[in-house]
Length: 209
Image (cartoon, rainbow, N blue to C red):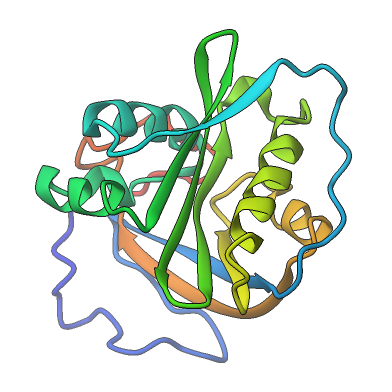
């Protein structure tokens, strides 16, 4: 992998044109969204067989496995990079609510609400396994996420999505009642090059090494 400390790498982002990235780096546009009042529920498929259960003090191995199964196609890597103590410190916090979406005894979705900031709830992670995308499972999960979040009577609930995510993700959040409030650009080491994720993950984001 190319050394990204090379002095030729632009030190600042070009806000009126292209900013080249060295090999080994990925960049994504992040859209930040918020909702300030509980909306009407999204329509769900009847008799879905889905249940949502809170997992108190989750085992880190269980968490990483579900996180990877859901997020590898979309380059979710942040929690996989955390060491055991750091990850455990987050997901075992009583103000971080980790929920598993289940069907027929199998874990098929993840929803994590972060209540650590007073009056400000973050929908930190939200997703279903690839085979359930488009099935209505996401609507089921979102309805319950917003009900649980607004039960605390927060000032707002916020979430973000990015251009590495499923192409329908942003529209899904907006349909659920969120509104976009800002954008940012995230640059990071490609997690596929370090072996953190499979090189076959996220084929819509080419590997350049």
